[in-house]
Amino acid sequence: MGKGKLKKFNEMKGFDHVIQVPFHLIEKDDFHLKGKWSGEFFKNENPLILELGCGKGEYTVELATKNPHINYIGVDIKGARLWKGAKLALQRGLKNVAFLRTNIELIEQFFGADEVAEIWLTFPDPQMKKTRKRLTSTTFLNKYRNFLKPGGVIHLKCDSNFQYTYTRTMVLLNKFEIIADSDDVYEWEHLDDTLRIRTFYEKQWLDRGIKIKYLAFKLHDGEFREPTIEIERDEYRSFGRTARE
Image (cartoon, rainbow, N blue to C red; front, side, top):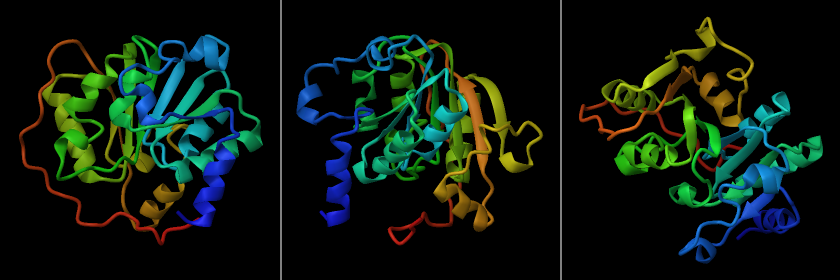
């Protein structure tokens, strides 16, 4: 591990708003704050919204800044990335934002029934080869509905046409309620301040002429079905390690 990453990890150990949970602590038991985040961690009963795969945490921090009466938790496994958002939240003095370092596959062990009001998925890896790893696959949707409130909204904002097409096909196939849908959000007549938040990587997608897509929907009870259609894969590559702020 490089000195820069090690320094960030050590600094985050002192951040009260960053929760890092070793796997062995939840291998058999749920996390102790499951179902209790608002009352015991945030010390209020405000709505709780998650950003899953939050990366550098920019969207989480901007959402928390714009909505002080809502609690936000950014979730990602990459500690060096989380450090940036955690540091920014600390500098802004935000009390309604936290970061959770864990695998999203374990998300059910951290949040209880009806605990989460909404979920944001911002520029997730489209996982074009592995359906079960897509954050909008039936595997994950079944996890989400175990802790989403009735009527809770899932927001997908992405650059990937593959991810957008796959998710939209999933939504239509299962007859989920669509709240919003745009294949070019910055040309959309309903664009609002929340969708105008731009992350470091989103700006690079836009600079490359790639349109940003947005889809918001609600789940329902019952069995979910996976789409079986062939979807054209994205031809462009994601940014590598050379991309820096």
